[in-house]
Image (cartoon, rainbow over all chains, first blue to last red; front, side, top):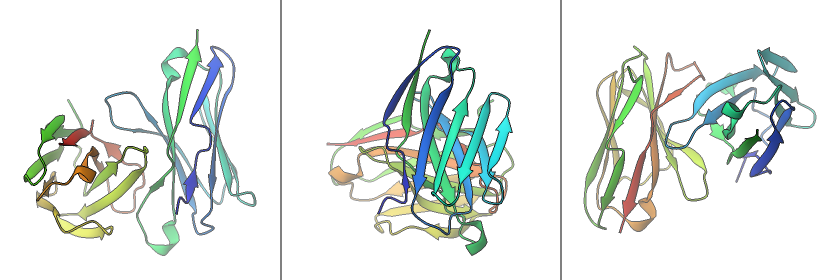
Amino acid sequence: DQQVKQNSPSLSVQEGRISILNCDYTNSMFDYFLWYKKYPAEGPTFLISISSIKDKNEDGRFTVFLNKSAKHLSLHIVPSQPGDSAVYFCAASDMLSGNEKLTFGTGTRLTIIP
Amino acid sequence: DTAVSQTPKYLVTQMGNDKSIKCEQNLGHDTMYWYKQDSKKFLKIMFSYNNKELIINETVPNRFSPKSPDKAHLNLHINSLELGDSAVYFCASSATVASYEQYFGPGTRLTVT
């Protein structure tokens, strides 16, 4: 049962434009969400997170939006830069249950076109 | 300095063999994890240790045995390797068990022939 879904396996965006990566989840108990970025032959690196008590969190060029009613979150990168080309994983957890486990999506490969 | 390191980076072995993957973190973190990324790119948690104590054990075959000699190390030993064990295995750590910001190692690509 795939509780975190990233339905777009790949996305290409022109340099300087906005990249929007999407993530859907099915478990209504999830209350904390994270985005990780992964370069080839490296492990995922933490990018940004959001708690379910918020609907937006911003860090420089990266903004994560959370729509709890739709069970949907998105990562916006603006402006997109060539170094942003990587695979982006969405992850979720239910903190209140005391379950420390992160459930990951299958990733979206973002390619920034110079 | 590498924060979370794994050895080896690549491992090719035959079915039935026993192998180990080592993981070390120099971040002073209390909690360490093992993840498996299969051919479909699912990244799934296998085990989690907090201060050398097992806290998460996801329905993993008992051929997989994690060992944490101290809180900076979490090794993964696999007995009687099977073809389906072929995957990339990632080690990770976090400051505490309640911290969801995990730091990952570079991964170990295991190929069982």
